Amino acid sequence: MLSRRQKHIVLKFFSLFSVVRGYNILVVVLAQYLASIYIFAHDKPLKAVLVDVNLLMLVLASSATIAAGYIINSFYDSEKDLINRPQKTMLDRLVSQNTKLSFYFTLNFLSVVFASYVSFRAVMFFALYIFGIWFYSHKLKKLPMVGNLVSAILAVTPFFAIFIYYGNFELVIFYHALFLFLLISIRELVKDLENIKGDFAQNYQTIPVKYGSAVSKKIVTALVCLTAIPIVILLTQFNLGYMSIYFFSSIFMLFIFIVLLWQSTSKYQYTWLHNIVKFIIVFGVVCIVLIDVNLLLKLTD
Image (cartoon, rainbow, N blue to C red; front, side, top):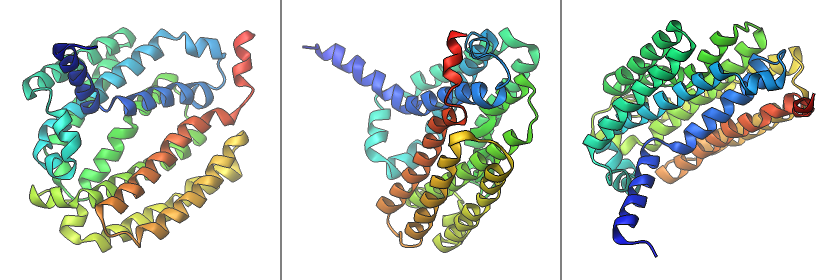
């Protein structure tokens, strides 16, 4: 049996893991590696990508920056989150604000250290990324449209770092990125609908707060329709292997999503919609391997 002190330490660990959204970071790490293997560096041997120390440093720098970003976001949103997610917030508060800020600065420092192994340009890239996350959390998040747009851009920035590193400028990467950007934008708008109570109480000028739920739903619907552009181009112009199954499935799931969106009125229903979009994103990460199901066999070459 664990002692009271040991239980307290375990709870603090889970509290910190909750604050930095450790599960999201693990998904990003997996996505960065799979995207590198199957998309960014598909012409390189699999072993060369897996043992690339520079890639590892970029992934670690991204993870540290993202974790720090969640901490500073939690710091600024503590009062709003207490209204929108009281149970999670109570868990998060097991770690003091001073401890969180200490971890925030430590993680950002580690991010720069990891990036410095790659190049000075990488250091500048992550320094700007760190500033962008802080500025978004401190100022831009409360602005309608601007906050959503910047949030979506920041979410895809870690993949942009890998994209620059490999210098692969194929059009297929652009359309994959556009599809991901649109999905993240949809998720951010649904989150605003889900968190409208806390946003209104804390004077966050999100689209649902300023223009109403109906306008938000129209914008989300338009974004879902726009996802058809990269999907159609990817399916008709590029060889996606079995990953085409994922995009056909996405069309079906997004159709169901729109039907449910216009029937939703409660936080519980918007949470379900948020989870549907998250599932489509995570499912897409796993399905990257379907681009070439035989690629893993090359490990033995």
